Length: 146
Image 1 (cartoon, rainbow, N blue to C red):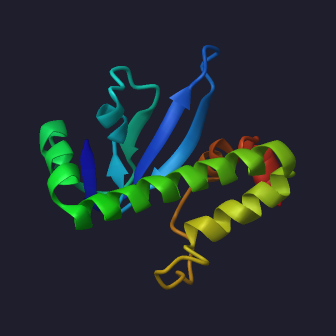
Image 2: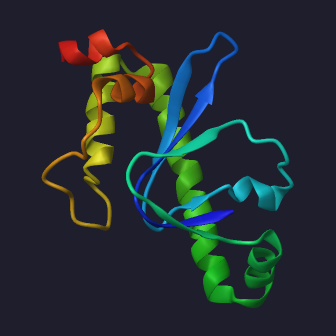
């Protein structure tokens, strides 16, 4: 498991047909690989640094110890996991019910951190139309149309 200190990490999955999809973009203060805590042995996704990044490796045994012995850490980590789960559910609903135009608008707002505790950024981070298309499940041509 890893804790992201700085940088941006893109999480992707690859279909049997070779189509890549971006399922998450993680940044500072995010965790990566927490599935190991639930006994997940095989990874279904690939993590790639998209900017210079610094990560802290966290041993499973150490994290389990912290979860048992440190209520403050346990509460913080549980809040993180629940918030991430809610985000994944929102992404699924977005994918199932919204047009690609609406999905793009939502993704741009998420990338600018609009509505988060942190202050919203005035500029969306540099990201290619191809990556945006992978993130919202459409084509680059459709993204450039908007």
